[in-house]
Amino acid sequence: MLKGKQSWVFSQRPAIIATGVTGGPFEANGNLADDFDLLHEDLWMGEDSYEKAHRVLMEGASRTALRKAEMEKKDVQFFLGGDLINQITPTSLSARSLEIPYFGLFGACSTSMEGLALGSFMINYGGANAVITGAASHNAAVEKQFRYPTEYGGQKPPTAQWTVTGAGAALLVQNNGGNDPVTTAATIGKVVDMGVTDPFNMGGAMAPAAADTIYNHFQDMQIEPSYYDLIVTGDLGKIGRVTALELLKNKGLIIPDEQFQDCGILIYKEDQPVQSGGSGAGCSASVLYGHLLNRMKRGELKKILMVATGALLSPLTVQQNESIPCIAHAVAIEMP
Amino acid sequence: MCAKPKKTPDQEQYDQLEKKYETKRPVLKNCLRAFWVGGLFCIVGQAISYFYIYFFNFTEQTASNPTVATMIFIAMLLTGFGVYDRLGQFAGAGSAVPVTGFGNAVISAAIEHRTEGFVLGVGSNMFKLAGSVLLFGVFSAFVVALIKTILIYMGVI
Image (cartoon, rainbow over all chains, first blue to last red; front, side, top):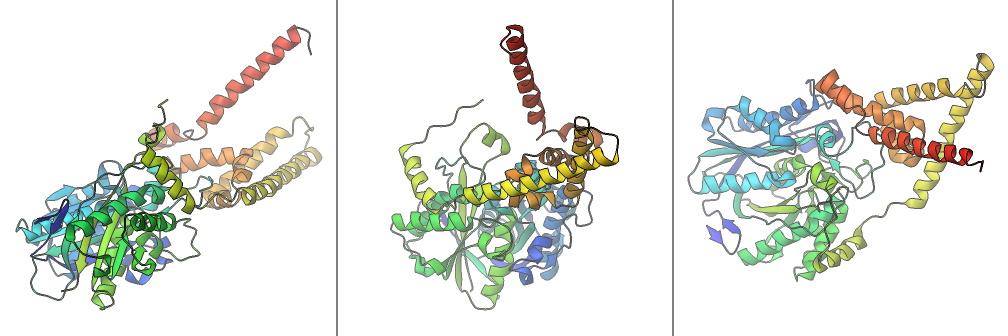
């Protein structure tokens, strides 16, 4: 049901009955290694190209979710997913082997919540009994497309972020009264462009989009930030996080520092050379479907608002001096 | 070339707010690191140059070719073993400006596009970073040579 300007309320409370999270070697050394279902030892993942390895991540996450729920692919009506590679081929190739009717999504790093919001909407209105939604990114494949060759010795500025090698997928079903996390609301963001042109400062570019979506979520839902135990952004990094906090404060929304977390900061250890933090479509997906939902199931968190942020740029738009258009989508997840 | 978009007042205001939190590049530290790492590269180069002069039949003029080739070979190994990009993050211009940096730009692109085959992958992407260096390097050499020729012709030098 539409509530306010741009939010949906899911009265049927679709349940996330299982998730699958895969990662790479760098994530295995990170902060949240225990929350991954499968960690690959090397970036190739037994394939002969990084793009194929990227597909392996997405496929692995989806299959793990199915296996955990003891469901088969024929029981799932739709697969909604995406990634950052041109024409989202890694996800489409995963859909080929999953053989589940497929919606390919592109929302850059916000894809995870775009998928979860749309999937919840489908389930809520009986459009499906079960859907899989997820997002993935692979450091080497993404850097190859957006930046320089992986072995190129260019110096990254402190504002840069590290693309996460990882995928997260969730299996979303009609609420069966079980004890699984449920989605209760979603706020779809608009494209916000505050004129940042530096592709090595994604956090700074995306912060206004995150702030806009968070602000509108609370306006539409008519609740206070204290309603949630945690408000988590996708990949703002250290710089984007504090910037978004200040933007929200300027709009009159005071969120305590410890209540406002970021997946890109959570995923890696302090001493890993990731500059401002992690990023990529797999960042929010793997941290939410792994670490955060595990914490919810352990009872540490009851209600969270997940805000995945995306920079909708391409190498071409950067070279043509376009500023970076950004977006953020929020989904509220609660324990029943 | 496309024009830079003009910033609206809102965007200007945001720019100022964001700059407050933006971690600045540590310029002085970067310069010092670039200075001594770059200098170290040059010492190695000089040592290799002397090696060719003393142990082989090279003169100070002719030793530069095998020296550059050796330096690039070392850069190739360091790139292949995944060391050069880490060195680059530490040293910045110190490892990018010497000829080894040029070698790294070519070699890293060649490695990167190996998966697309030799012709459309390695062949057409190898110079995607270094190509501009070649083009503008050759062109500026041409301009400098032209000026020198004119000056000689006019009897200035």
